[in-house]
Amino acid sequence: MTDTADGWLSRPGTGAATDDAGAVLRAWRLRHRHTQGHVADLLGTSQQHLSQIEKGTRPLSLEQRRQIVAELGIAPEELGLSSGQTRGVVAGDDASPEIATNRAQWRAERRWLNQHRSDLARLAVELYPDEHRIPRAPLIAAPEWLPSEPVPLHTIALSLDETEPPCAVDGSEPESARTRPLRIADTRFEHYTAAIKHLDRPALFESRPSYRLLDGSPADGRLSFGLAAYFDKLDISEAVGHEMAAVCMDDPGALGAPGRDLAGRLPFRELIGDPFDPLRRAVIPAITTLTIRLRRYPAEPSFLLHWRDPSRVATAGGLYDVVPAGEFQPSSVALWDRRNDFDLWRNVVREYSEELLGTPEHDGTRSKAIDYDAWPLYRTFEHCLDAGTASAHVLGVGLDALTLAATILTVVVLDDDAFGQAFESVVRHNDEGEIVGVGENVAEGVPFTATSVERMLSEEPMASPGAACLSLAWQHREVLLGL
Image 1: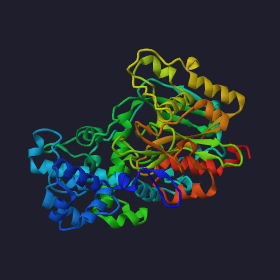
Image 2 (image 1 turned 60 degrees about the vertical axis):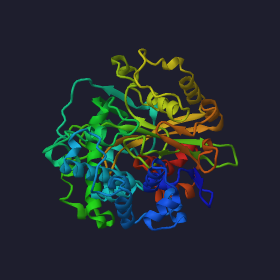
Image 3 (image 1 turned 90 degrees about the vertical axis):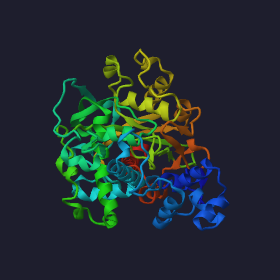
Image 4 (image 1 turned 135 degrees about the horizontal axis):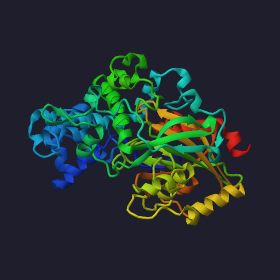
């Protein structure tokens, strides 16, 4: 963790979030028991220069990366290059130069996707009409998905249909072939998640039952759901994001070009068609929650922030997000949990438990349903809601313009007493990354002020849903904070 000179975020170094070539080089050197001086001599540079590269404070040019590959034999894709040797994850098949090159290209594109998600999302939002864009965030929404003001979360009625709904696009179509690398000669992985599993698996990666949005809107006070699997979401969302990354990687000028210049170059996105049609594809929402802490006067209100570690998560790696955030899904695969956990607020509290208190994720290893009424954390939150020291609202439903992944946007406001009752201490590290703030005490968060909100939305790499929550909450701050 490093503090910037102006006292801004205490956070993971930007090199870890965007380019780990220096860390790759250092790991290779230590593995081979070479000194910095020896490796510097091999590369024709100084030990000081090499030290800066390894620390991530000195960037590597394309030619320097090629030199490292030639002199040290590090696999090109480990340094963000798109050709050469591969890591041989799937046995036997990697012996084929064609397969090895194809997989190396895919890995390089996925690495590039993770390094440029924020910029790619800003480009992708230009593909959609102004009336579908959420202000100050690369998120899009159908007009009926955004209420005119925040809706109390507990007033939204949910319904669940457990029959199988139709789905026209599932990610296995020929139009997505560009995003699916070769599994064997002349045969590609059938789905994008199969490629991730075998070639680039993060620490947290499993398909779980999830709730699929079918109808309704927060403005109408109702949302209707069916059932699906988490990988049904990734097979569409990560593939459509990968497609745009591949286009921009092949044509670097496209990243700064107007969205209209990409017309005809994104066949899978075009196949999906209307992004708001819940029967065209499986629209499986996450729930992203902005947590605002009303600190005692004269301290300003603050909000909690999370950095998502790309080595641990399959989506939004290397970006900041508000916290907590998680998929809207049952806590286990047990049939009884489909109904017991079918509740927006219960899902949010489970995420609070995991991301802020560091409790183990509800992973389906237990056999009993969660008794929410007897759970101390849940009871504390319910007491705070009843006492008026906490509130929970839905801001809307949106789609990340890059991946078309859906999110239910929510905000929870806690006064200092309620925050202290719910969270005696806040962990810094969790299974998905790290809680960050302006100071060392991450529970103090980031000031919820015009300056900080503007800086997060305009200068920092934020996950699209988190940016939307922050933008909409600032827009509705008088209602949310009771001003």
